Structures are given as structure tokens and as C-alpha cells.
Length: 322
Length: 170
Image 1 (cartoon, rainbow over the protein chains, first blue to last red):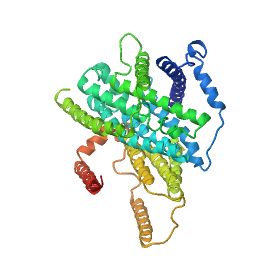
Image 2: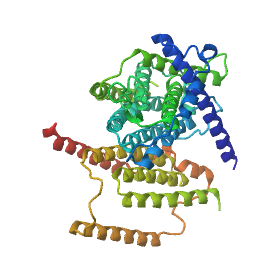
Image 3: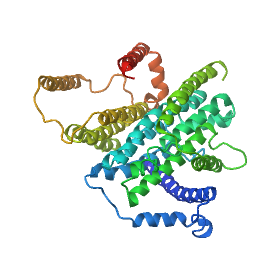
């Protein structure tokens, strides 16, 4: 029974914190983008533009909820909540500090990869259920992208697992706290694996430069074409949560998680996560979208072979040096 | 009833319901999604059996990767709104017979099982160790090394076969 209460409390807390952070991230992104690209508005709504997320939410809630003619109603309505659930569930295994972990699973890394792999299915059923050719094309692209980037993602996630000898996220961070952060030493394994991991995670979250399932310049809005109001908001939110969680996982696996001097563990973890998160935004407003075939070439020609080499090198390193 | 029993019945009912939906739904994508749900609830049962690693792999490999391939196949085949009418062809009759045969074999095997599984222990430390990835790795690379390698070879043969079959068309 204690475990149930523990799980419920932590679950509620994490979902609450994630939702608040998402609203703040929305504000941050709007303002950041406005500064980078001279957009008017987001910097001016309320003090420092702080009221922008509220304005966005109120606007979205007011919209009429439309289900297209001859859409697959069940799948169409099921997709947004499923997408949100898949994005939030990953947060269960993130070690926020040495003792704030909702579920410190023995197979933590496998769990987050598994739930991450499920994340593409809501995107696809949104594309299929909408009965819209742009949405369907977006869904097909999402499938192709996800199944390809799954491979480098798993390979890159294996590197910290091999180097630290555990799949438990708390044990991986603990190892980095007592030895070195994986991006510091052995950096020739840690840094490339970290880069591949973050790229593949961004691809799974459909963020620019990997947002070809949405690609508003060619596919109207891709999978979200037919979605309005709160359902669109759920998709939008799932994307933010996914990015946030990806940053947290990257920080835990490669950047030493809660480890750091002077400040409490939670502070370090949050700082590292937000730094990665900010970097993702920086990329988003700087880079252009890849073309579909370039995306596949990047994955299969460069990331996958590099991942295989890294995994083999990590095994050699652990046996002969570490 | 303990909480595990309640969860087991929830998962069991959900598995049977989603598995039936796979067969009875007309929409192929609906069927595929029901299959995902079925895999997911099955993973829940694995967790109840203390097999956490298998549960995570079940979701990762089947619900994640293999279902995406299924969906690809569904999208690449030209589909009509109404599926084919049910007709009794020889292959279908054989399929039905095989299903009945497998089901009866399973029932017979189930009847022969001892009440308490061999090697069963209620010792919490032993049970907690049982489903872990360390234990799985240990037995996989010592006791069951040959079957493990044989399966790898089988997969390699399948991949090479797929490339050979697809190559002229690439």
C-alpha cells in the first residue's frame, strides 16, 4: 500500500511540475523566438510577456472542436490523449535527485526506450484517423522517421549502460558522480554518444530540424491539420513534454544528472535539463527543416554506423581499460 | 483479493477483449491498434510475474518496432473499405484446424502442470532477483547459450534472405 501512495504522490507531483514547466517553456520559446526573429507580440503580453501562455491556452480552449466528415472518430479522438500519456509516462524513471525518483526501475533505460517507441503510434493514428491526405502523409513520415531513428537511439543509450554497467538510471548517475561524467571521461565515447542520443531523441519528439511529420510549408500542418482546440493543444503539449523529458534523460545519462558541487542535486538536474532544453530551442529557431531523404541518409549512413562503432568501442574500453 | 489479483483480472479481461478486437474489427488500422493494446496488457501480466525485463522488451520490440512495420505493410497494400467476405477456402479450414489443435494441446499441457512450479520459492530476495536483467543475462549466456546463438543465426539468415529477395528491386 505504501508503494501505491508513494507512486501516486510522485506521479501527481511530476505531472504537475511537467505541466507548469510546459507552460513556462511555451512562454520561453515564444519570447526567445520573438527576440531571435524580430516577432512582435510575445514579448509584450503582460510583464515580460509572461501572460502569453495564458493567452494561448484561453485562445485554444475557445476554439470549436471539429471532427472531420468521415474521419475515424474513435482513433481521431483517441490520438491526442494517448500522445500526451506516452510523453508524460517516460518522466516516471527520471532521477531528479538522489531521492526524488518516482520509479527507480531495474530496467529504467529499457523502459524509457520502450515508451518512447510507443510515442509514434498516436502520431500515426492521428494521421490515419483524420481522413486527410496531408495528415496521412505526415503520419507515414512519422512512422518512417521513428522506426529509423529508433536504431541510433538504442545504440547511443547502450553506451552509458555498458560504461556504467547498469540499466538503472539512479545507478548510472551514481557511477558518474563517483567517477566522471560520461561527456568528460571517456569523452571520445561519451560526447559522440551524447550527440547521437540527443539527435535521435529530437527526431522522436518531431522537433525542428526533424519535424517533417508536421512540415507546415509542405503538408499544411501534417498530422495536426484537422485538429482544433484542446485536442491540438494536447499534441502541442505532448511535443513540449517529450522535448523536456528528452533533455532530462540526456542530462541523467551523459551529463551526470544530479551530480555537481555547491548546490543541491535537484538544482543541478533542473539546471542541466533546462540548459539542454534551451539548446534545443536555439537549434529550432536557427536551423531549417531537413528534407525527408536527407533525414533518412543522416540516420542510416552516419548515425547508425557511428552508433555500432561506439557500442563496440565501449565494450572494448570496459574490458581493457575501465 | 490482493491488489495483484485485481490487476491480473483487469489485464486478463483487457487482453482477451483487445485480442478479440484484432480479429473482429473491420478497419485494419483499428486491428493493428488493438494488437498494440493487447501487447501492452500482456506486458502488464509479465510485470505481475516479476519479469520486468521481458515486459519492457515486449513493449519495445513488439508494440514499438514490429507494430510500426505492420502499419507500414498495411499502408503499402492497397486497401478497400470493406474487407474480404468470409469464405471457407482450404487454407482457411486448415488454419482453423491448426488453431483448434494448438488450443487443445495447450489445454492438455496446462492440465499436466504441477500445482507448484518446480524451483518455485517464496523467498522475497530470490523472487526480486528472478526477473532482473542481470539474472536474465547470466542464464542467457551460460545455461542457454546454444539456443541463444541459434536464434541469432536464424535472425541473421532471415535478414540476409530479405536482402537477397529485395535486392533486384532496389
